[in-house]
Image 1 (cartoon, one colour):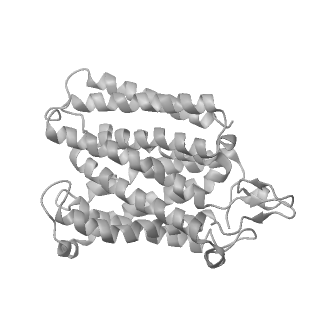
Image 2: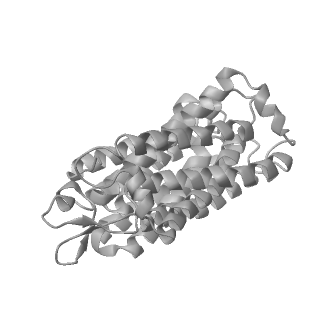
Length: 352
């Protein structure tokens, strides 16, 4: 099983997560305006699951330390499996809301508001679960506070766009906020399913390469390796999607109802972009879970959800979602970017 040891490499993994989580939604835009987000989302979920399986069978099953996928599943207990699976269900509900918010308000609004809020609440939750491993709380909470200011600034800028002061604009913000509240909890469930290292004296420490290679050290029984936990998490997404999505296609959050059979009318281009989007997100998730043993769940989650910065860059500079905004909006957007950059820098500094 591939594991990390160096904090700076863990930060690099979290930075890649930030790029992946902040960029996957471009696939939704590239799929085309005629391809409804409900149909795109089916392929997105398939891409997430396929990528997690590949990681679990390769990096998660090879090497001198840890347990292979099959060994890990056979020794797991129902509680750990339930935590990881529940994380997938919660994430799926939140992510569906996010995709709907993107369809209404665009990437530069849905991500900073929804995922930015998830960052703030998620860091607080993961810190409360394990404060001893989360680093300097002053730096951590200062960084989170600046991200919160960035969210507020972005929401105010969005309200300045023509046509966004009515019911449609409010609906986009509401869905993003609801997404953020739910999204903040999924990583906590996944982290609770993951095994720590048990030393010869019975004490428990984070799962890193050097910790597991100590004499007499073993993986915590009943709980899951990062790769297995991530895989069970994605099955929570997949199974819940077969329950949630048909209902949302019949009673959509955006637009008119969509027939399930319409999925099979899509072109190869339509389906491929969904699979690519899911694969991009899943790469980020896997690397983030691997890094959490070194960086701590609070720091790893906080940096990963810096995706809000990346998505805002895509939305503002590539997709030009604020091109019709009145004069003075650019200053608000620049202030938002400044808050994000400084806030993320403080989160990185937390454990240095």
